[in-house]
Length: 160
Image (cartoon, rainbow, N blue to C red; front, side, top):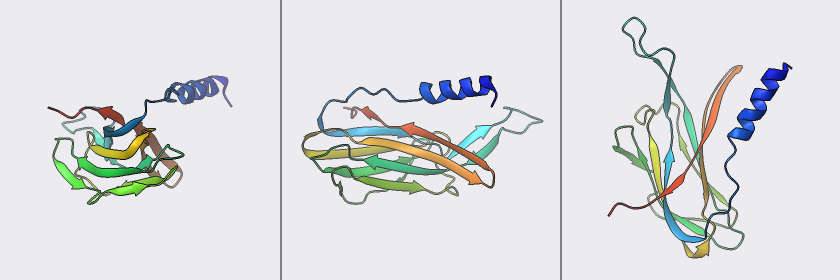
């Protein structure tokens, strides 16, 4: 393998790893998760055409990172690029047991979300615990070609 390709690959993998600092314990949060139900690619304008678009499926993974305390997912709202609520994925609170995972899935054919889509996820727990690890795996796997990447949720404060 080309040594430059190997060096680039190592930097890409190492450079994209999240910080390993421990979060503070919490009894609940509101999380913002950027997702991409489609991405734009190619040149911005070619003969009066917009860039090409490519649709992706999105697997949202909500992982309880506690060995002792269950958490509850209160809501998981999916918004479009324009900020319009598309869907509430959690109609009633869902309990995730210790070290368990709850998954949400946005199909590849879903076209409403767009390149600026997002989830706003609210969770709580009965006692202070580790916040969940929430990520979205974006993918399109077609024959020998695979496109995939991950985005991570960030805590936000409710507007007052």
